[in-house]
Length: 611
Image (tube, rainbow, N blue to C red; front, side, top):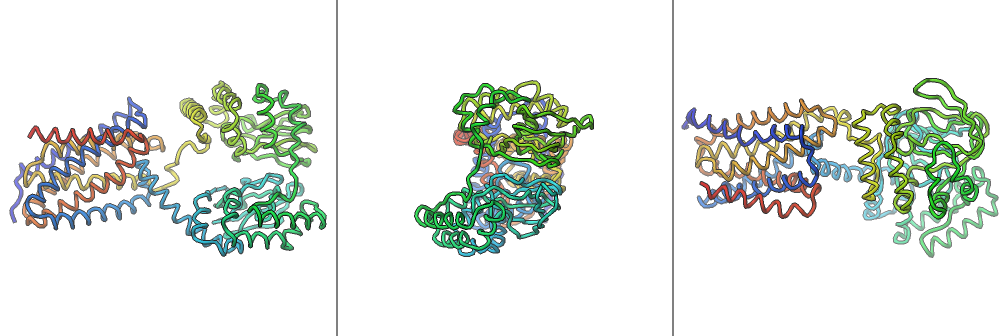
């Protein structure tokens, strides 16, 4: 078998380095330029278009002209399937974090797995047994995973029930906060809050994770939206409404008389059959009129002071009025701040996490506390306990977020509030964020409010790479997977026909935005710049080495094997473009993708004219 000369091997190595030098160059660019999503989208689609043109002109067209279409086609199919298989493997090790497109693909695959898990769990509850697969898919799209550490609150007594929970792993204790004794412990595959969910009543117990727990939360709105179109579900719900469990629950925990329960049963079953819905078994007392009297004079913060009456009325409709016994806990330090407390009368003692001293706060004149953690989506930096019988209003985070979307003055007031120095001081002093990170969060939150998008809580600013121990290796393998086909192409081109300008330009232009986008994303995930630069530099060297090895391999193969191997490389690269590059560009840039892809395509053809 003929051996490639040293000059050909060296040439292949250098061409591999040239094509891949844009990888560390893209990483270095992030030091002085933070590209917008639109800029990354333009460059990514431009590179994809250039690579598409180069592959078409220099690999596919040339091989077809030689009459080797069939081995080329088989190789393309093998290369595409090989890329998909290996891509799935590296993504499962955390490699999906390298790009937004691979992240979205990975999360969509998890959606399917989630659906299968939900299906098996939900069928343990008799209500879901007769549902069709189509109905289950509707439920699966709405269900969201929620994770709680040991000791964290899931919901508190008196909260409105908006979700039905399924316990995927761990355990949950139900307890009455007045006596602080767990009345029941629920474990894997149990449902949580079913009776409150089906009767539309507030929770009568506090649920706390007794071990690290993973839950699936099914929104009540999604469940009840299925009722009009699902006779099987309607029948199952009607049976539950008339069950002894529901009667005992309403009588024991909500104090309804048996005659009142029967009247509600009859009315609920009747309206369910006619309209696919029914009213709650109890009336929720918001004490809205009392709140409106004091809303503009709440101490602690003046957030509501400048709101118009109609917006204050909308807020009062979302409030829940609660009573707290002496010694009852409002929240613990380190818990997610999901409730804003506005006290009408009573007294609260709080344990400050900074100076470790206990302060007794007189809140009889309508104080609010814990609002900084609530508004920023942080963890509570203190614990709060009722030091005497205390009553007041509670606003949940989900209700506040919903109000922001419909109340324009509230939205503008909140934007102004977030830009106050007190918020930055709180994030740096209490939440231990750097000044840069705190400023970044504030700017992001204000931008999200202006765009009518959900605000990312401080606690979830980043998808933490440390949660995926194999992520750095997975990312590196994923990037290596993207680069192997181009090395084969360079090696083949060096031996047989010389590497064309268009192919070299296409590879260079596609590598740069890929490195720029991936490096920006990985830095946001918390990976060190030096680590990212090392990864890309090693990949550049590996591309050169593989290109040199490819030139040795292709020097002695038959035309059929050459066409097949070229097809494997082309198929893998075309699949990579379609599966990662162009979706990445569209996610970030939208309509700009089509035209920039065209420009890249024409640029590669221009380089072809120079040969």
